[in-house]
Image: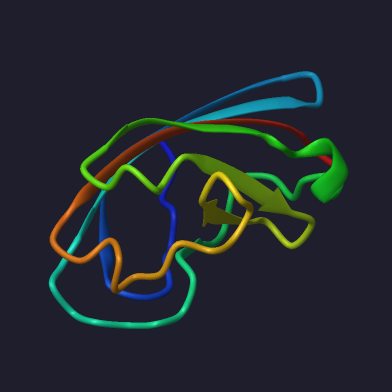
Length: 109
């Protein structure tokens, strides 16, 4: 199990990870409250820092009540961003009162 501290207004319902060599797989389920916040959804403190954005595009949404939330991207600082199909950030306002489940596979630094 991993604890994923978060920004914005969401609760981590469950989160687990497996690391084999440098490859890390994270699976999490989060729920968002009704608070409006126009900033992009950002989940911080991955269990291991990624090697960078170019090698960390292996995230996908497995379930969401918001159809525009389709992709997860990691950044070298150990954070995940929720993106739309056109690579724009999904905001907390868009995710208000919804749930999100995702899987992220990335290379650890």
